[in-house]
Image (cartoon, rainbow over all chains, first blue to last red; front, side, top):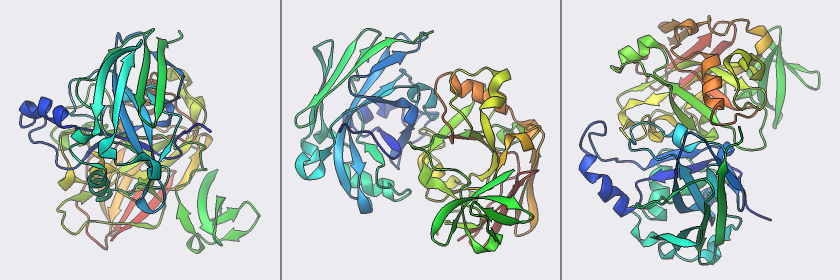
Length: 207
Length: 248
């Protein structure tokens, strides 16, 4: 049976080194005034969830969306990771990370979710994960999870300092810099060894 | 009607208010002190969306040295941050400023997508009271207010009751009040919201479909003060009830 989350889905900002390097010159400037200390999280509400192969509607006012390709941890009992799943965390492109990104990230359908939950016992070390993003078959991004700022155990520990991830909750490992843009009509394929492929197509929003 | 959800005899169940007591679905009347209060919400098939507003009262925006926002400042909470009436909320030992926020909370009653302002009333199941605690020590300017401030375990008491929409004729004219150990520290009125309830439902449903059981916490007025372990914090809204929480 294909996977769908049963708990809250959290995303993680600034967990790839090149993502941090790209923003570093702004981090001590207003409005941020300092680099982040705790993990910077956001929520992908249930209305955003799209299954593998689902079409995702783009609002007419938005010419392009940003593809946040990642792998997420799915929590099991007692704070343990049950497994991992591919995710396509779509955003309306936005330059400021000062305010929570609800209107950029919580649109209907804006989270593609892989159909395969890879059990932790089969997945191997997350630092060995790599994934590829293709738009209409053309390779646009390769992501290497050895480049995380906080690895999975550190991320879980630092998040766990202020909130409990419950069984079924999901925590994305982060999206690397160089996120590809896609438009209506594009087919997005995110694939990783052992995970298969997560495919979604962007369509025009029905009026 | 006022609905509650309570743990009684080891079972989570629905109840309604009846003459100061709780009427269970099986017909028994039990004392309010005989149960453990849960958030007054029926379970949902998928995790409920919990939207919360910041700076949604002109006076509170001023107090916090921000100009009033031009569009809603909204953040999202996970369900793990909710807790019920008469529960305890932890204040970490090392913090300097933890404050309550008394908030009118909308409970969505039916699927809402692209709803127009004049129709929003039909999409509301009812109203309850939230105490949206914040620990200001942990504020950072990244997706502010960040989850370390606003998504802590059991840091958002909700209840006691879900009051049906029919029993709240004008949600935009309700007195709010918070007391700490019996002393009034916050008072305001929902008429002073910057973005009112119909606006918020129209705004959110324009880009995200709301489902039954989803929540909108509508922000808090002026008058937040630091709370210490042992303090009893009572957030109340006219017609909705008094939500009691103790800091530990």
